[in-house]
Amino acid sequence: MVLTRQSREPGHRRKFLVVVDDTPECDRAIYYASRRAAGTDGGVVMLGVLELEGVNQQWLGIADLMRAEAHEEMQARLDKYAARARQVAGIAAELIIREGSKADAITALIHEDRDIAILVLAAGMAKEGPGPLVSSLAAGHASRFPIPVTIVPGALSDMELDALA
Image (cartoon, rainbow, N blue to C red; front, side, top):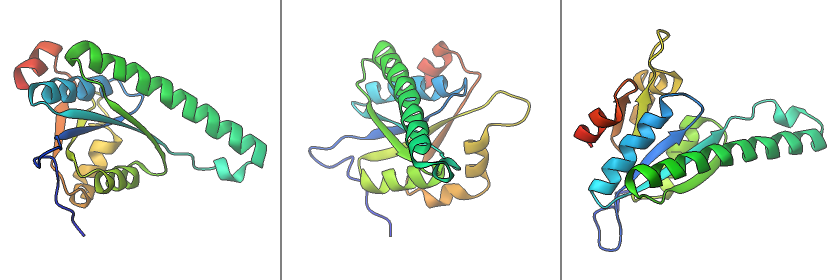
């Protein structure tokens, strides 16, 4: 079931969704989405996904500790990128942490927040390819998203991104 986006209705605004991870190109997606949102009176949602396979196989106390540490690390990463969005575009981003697979977390969030209108990812610069999330989307998972996906080349400078955003 595809729900209509609300981003153009009165009282709503278009939001750009960025998946935050520890890759160098993540900053490029944050930068582009923040500048684009600022230029269009939109918002930015930053999603951190904790893929905690194996945590549930630990003893209860250890699993809880591992989960808490993972949440703290992700919150610190989100806070860092939220500060970056404020610095480059004056945007106050929404920060969300979910557990599970990235594709499932992205899909669920898009269905929950009908103001999210564009998913912004950055392609990796490594010789191994554009990165796992971009690769999985290219392999056909993008059809699960009811919104457009913008893939920002990871090698673009701030100046080049400003010209595009």
